[in-house]
Length: 98
Image 1: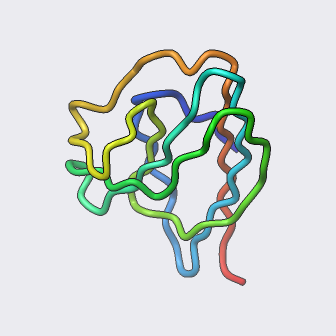
Image 2 (image 1 turned 180 degrees about the vertical axis):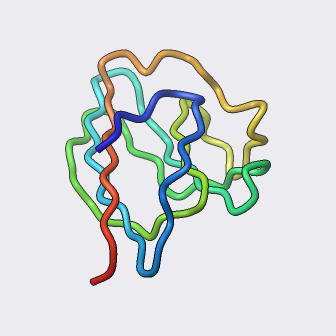
């Protein structure tokens, strides 16, 4: 399991049927956006988690994953916001196959 940090790119260990399980907690003022990328250069929004969210869900892993306070549909890796997410947290666990 890894604690994702705002603006930092995480590179999962990819394998056949790689999926991720994500646990998201957003505080009352900071939403979080999950981004994925195939090339590590341009990140595309997978999902935005609004304030006061607490959930666990599954998603297909991308070769590169990041979280950010950004909300744009796409963001360049060099421009991923490193703005503090306050007490919001995102944890990712990788699993293989189904």
